[in-house]
Length: 335
Length: 54
Image 1 (cartoon, rainbow over the protein chains, first blue to last red):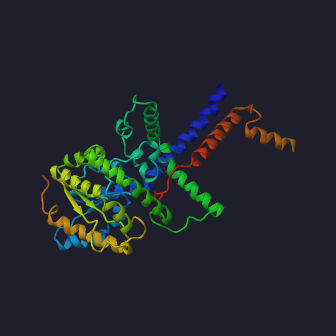
Image 2 (cartoon, each protein chain N blue to C red):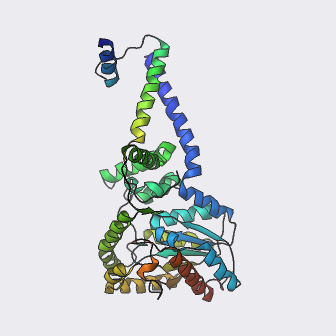
């Protein structure tokens, strides 16, 4: 028995060491953590930018600073827009940033139609890639928000909650999906498997498939949001609460999408009805809404793939956004 | 050849390994850790859209 314990102890020591090494490596190389550190170092009074990869693609900091300077309102930009995340990730990013003591002058949140509604897929299985920020920036108490119904609503809720708690407890759990990506890339290199054309957001073919997926789900999600106002805004409400606690204002910006998406989603009556409800709900809480989805320059040629603006589009969007903010939000003092 | 077959059976788990010294048990523990880490690193997850520097 003692010898068996010796073997188990040796294995545990190696695994513990691997956990420590991965924890140290992960903190330095996990993209959301890198962006968080840069945002925190930018200081107080910044414009805090949140959103998914479409906001990442739409933000050209140089163009934004130039436009801010022209308006005499230049200030730091804390860019916490993170690709492959959703509104729950934006909330966690904002909460972590604010909890570190930083006070932004304004919070800008990128949105595309239904993207600020609560995500359909939640729980540990969705916490991969950049979305592993749910494991890195969460607290154990978040299990009740991350897994609705935990612990006793159902066996699935109990199981998912335990998986969440176990995964976030160790670096091996937090960064597993990222190690897996590295191994998959090694496998691709060894087998000579091509990944096809890709940009900084991933394979172009994957972007086209993702855009179709967004398109196919958007109508039903928007119709539901119109029929049951507020029922799908748990994470956005939490985000607004967190920002309001710092007496800061939020401006949500509707981002442009390619023509095919606009025709099939944005032009639908339920999309228009939701935008109206959304803007009114924001306004009632003292926040703002800027719609740049129909900017005249936002033609398909401005997009780098099926979802993301290219460099020229990002520069135009950033300038337009600052112009719109300058009219209202940047002139106002925090309440 | 018989010796190699015996090793392969042991590695594959068909033949029980009975280390005779503390050092042997220690090496067995390291082997377990290695197997666990290989399994850990090769668990596939849906991670298409991440563009991480990791």
